[in-house]
Image 1 (cartoon, protein in one colour):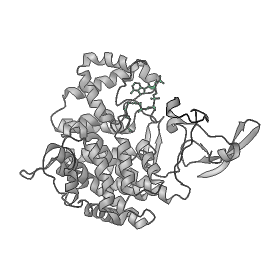
Image 2 (cartoon, rainbow, N blue to C red):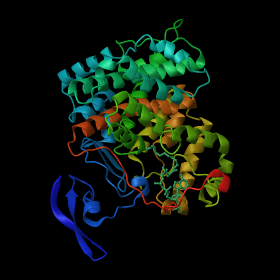
Image 3 (cartoon, protein in one colour):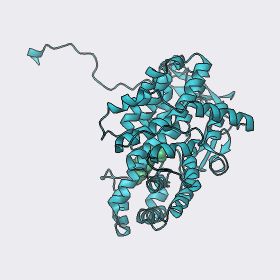
Image 4 (cartoon, rainbow, N blue to C red):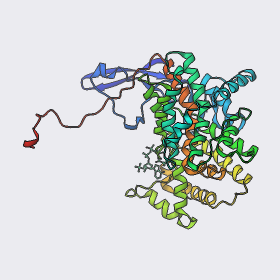
Length: 430
Ligand code: CMC
């Protein structure tokens, strides 16, 4: 990161020099950390649309160009040519593993897939109709009660053990949340299976029948995990960083990230896309819903469209669309009415002046819901799968943050517009 230019801010009768920081790629960043000390003023940026909260070497997005890279590798190349565990290694350690490193890492993750047996009882405390995301928030937070030997965030070894545990146990916990909701017995992980296949096994296998997913479905699951693995400083990742800035334990921080991801504007969007497509129901009704989305007085938005950062086609959405066709083709569902509806909606929206002008393109969630539904997942599991895949990104960003000497407890300022000082009035006089 270079530090050789200055920006000048004129404020009242003062001229304040602010250093300009240069990244390896992407826009320059004006360092305002000394602004308050120099000017007694804060910056105001709701939603952090112009504020970099940290320095990071993990993921780069160019929203205008539709570029997403993990550690410099374009997402579409990783999704097509690598696999999820290799991508996990890349995100955590900064480089792709060689064959030995990959084997050792795979073994390390596989070794941690089982959860403490008492956690089975923990699941049983939830109502059967609980949303699996509510179970995820609770159970992942509760890992800190079961794995007390990996809570010291100042010990790099304990941090790595916690990271492996989170990546390894998340599929087991996600599958348990699903099995619990449908009243089927929990399936233990099978360590002879790859990461994605093992998850499909724990989600869909039952003790009385053999289950063997096709190579296409395993590959699709693995690819979906890769596409969701990290996305720089999005809301849930920033939540993990903010929670951990207080020194909170890793499991509590990841639980906070899961809670944030659940919202429909973030990870909950693929569930919302499917609800929307079902509500539209017929191609004939698309114009009616497009008109609703454009109406300023109507809160309805086209779910799966638009992105805070991408003002171009989301590069993940392209691979997701391809995967969607592969999965539906494999399952003999190429004429799925929801897929046809989605494709028509995409076509109409991409030609509509409102969406063109506002640069609203399909995002990753537009096709992921249709794909996951075809694979057999209920809608309530969609965000759980996102959380499973994003765990490695959260963990990599969490490690990076703890190792960054410049990071301190997150403590935003505010523009106060409430009452000024006034005397207290007793209840009988109000
Ligand atoms: N349908 C209709 N209008 C939209 C949409 C949409 N999906 N998205 C944005 N707009 C309009 C919005 O009304 C605003 O118009 P105006 O400038 O006239 O007020 C303009 O486009 C800019 O929108 P914004 O809300 O200021 O943009 P944002 O960056 O704050 O919001 C977003 C980004 C993703 C929350 C939003 O596009 C949205 O709600 N999309 C639907 C939900 C969705 O698909 N979310 C998944 C995001 S991708 C997964 C992830 O990375 O988590």
